[in-house]
Length: 333
Ligand code: UDP
Ligand code: MG
Image (cartoon, rainbow, N blue to C red):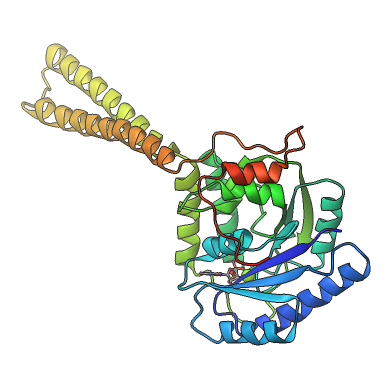
């Protein structure tokens, strides 16, 4: 029977954490009673440098319930990093990540576990209904996914960070040593057998959003810059376009000068070179940017391929672990 770990990143979530823990422990017990997961399954809260009583509450809950564990980060490192700390810090056959406010229906985890038992390594929760989100949140979320797709980033629309990953997927993820982290963009790059589960997103049951507009913009930029060099290419294209226009303007000025009497003295010699040089500069910046972009992608040292399994008796997980450049210590087992 598989051991399930539920990872919950928390930032200043003192108002929700006790209720979240109650609901998740209840879910674990239900799944254990129906023999879908082992008795050693657990919930791991990751405190992302909260400034309120979040960590105190986690400690209390861990003392009261054998299923509850906690990891505390030294400072607020952001949702994505807190998630990574949890995902790579626990040891389980499958790990589900879910937000602390349970806007993502925790009962869907049962369906995820069922899909996993059918042989899927990656089960993505996709929001089929966001009617409880504000109009602003819905508009920014749609814009976010559209922009990412335009930039060539492979994302599953309306899938956030509610997903189940099996151990091989986590071991593959471990090899992505990037600092500029955008899990929703990296996960589709991993491959593996993937299933999606639709669910209805509900409102936060307490507290306020920990994702202000500044954090949303930063997540969007992270998504683009960590997975696409399209913006740099656009700079080069703009440069080429402006240069081409300036050549046409030069030709036009020449025609006016040769065939009409309306030529303004000094106009062409001032305006045309300034546009031409401007365009050329942008083009050069774009070309340099292209190389910087390449270097940038290289310095991430992403693995060129990911081994899903091997035919020999060699455990693919051990192989993946062996191949990892950087081994993150298992904090909790
Ligand atoms: N979160 C975090 N670190 C942060 C911001 C948010 O760990 O710096 C967590 C937060 O506690 C929650 C999840 O990320 O569990 C999603 O945040 P929230 O529900 O506030 O975002 P929203 O649903 O409003 O987009
Ligand atoms: Mg939320």
